[in-house]
Amino acid sequence: MSPFKFHPAIILLGIILLTAGSVAIIISCGSDEPARRADVSPLFEPIPPEAPVPEDNPMTEEKIDLGHKLFFEPRLSRSGIISCNSCHVVGAAGVDHRDVAIGEQGRLGPRNTPTVYNAAFLKAQFLDGRAETLEEQAVGPIQAHEEMDLTPEEAMARLERSGYRPYFEKAFPGEEEPFTFENLAKAIATFERTLITHGSPFDDYLEGDDSALTELEKQGLQLFQNSGCLGCHHGPLLGGRSFTRFTHAANKQGEDTGRYQVTGDPGDRYVFRVAPLRNVELTYPYFHDGSAETLEEAISIMGESQMGRTFNEEEVEKMVAFLKTLTGEFPVIPHPTLPR
Image (cartoon, rainbow, N blue to C red):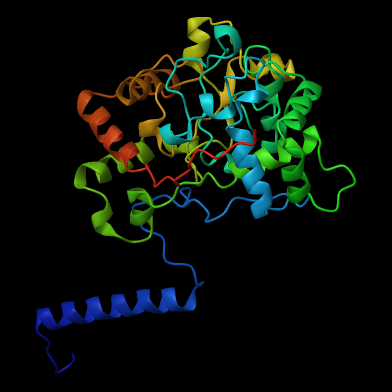
């Protein structure tokens, strides 16, 4: 038996120091990335500082400026009243807060307007994923009968008369014919890649700021993770990277069958792109048909239809508190001066 005896407090201190030292060694010998929080799933990611850019459409200030103008240009609609910003209002979290969009002649669109903010990080565009890129998405509403209702030829003729050609030439230098509908799409997509939000309390918490979330918000985070929400709502946008069957839509027997209208695959009936939850506090109403007016209502419906459980009032309060921490800082987007 050892002749030396140690006070229990000294033994405990030694264990603490040894443990702390071991952790420090693990961190210092690991990657350069900051250690992940133990209470946050690695499936969560911060929003990248910049959007991914395709090789055939590099970002330039001239192209951003042209896309900015075109996004606000009402002459791209048959009536000369509706622009991209009419539905994707940059000053209102990128949505119009209507159940479904309203287009030319008051025609109702089939679905709720998704936010344009952070759209550059989505797996696919539109709620049914029918467009893979922002460029492909940008020209859809211009041509859609219930939205802006112009042909590509009509759109370019209007822009020609309005003095846009010099802006296209600056944005696409060196091209034999820069004034094209394809380049219109590239310019709008380039502008949309600047519409990114950062600096949410949740991101601060991910980066190690314990005070970024309140106790109620932390409880909501744990409930979100432990209830199965994370299975679909993960990644930098907490969603937007996959498709799933929305049984609430199926149970309503609605006419909108989602991705089935794109693929024709019976297995895609009532399948929609998983909604991204960034800034969800501000993108009401919710779901593809805008049928949920509040976050509280949306959470209750999702619990019952997607997870087969009923969230009680206290759980809904915690979940709402957490979801509000996903609201980030929006860039200031002024109304541009349009050519006349």
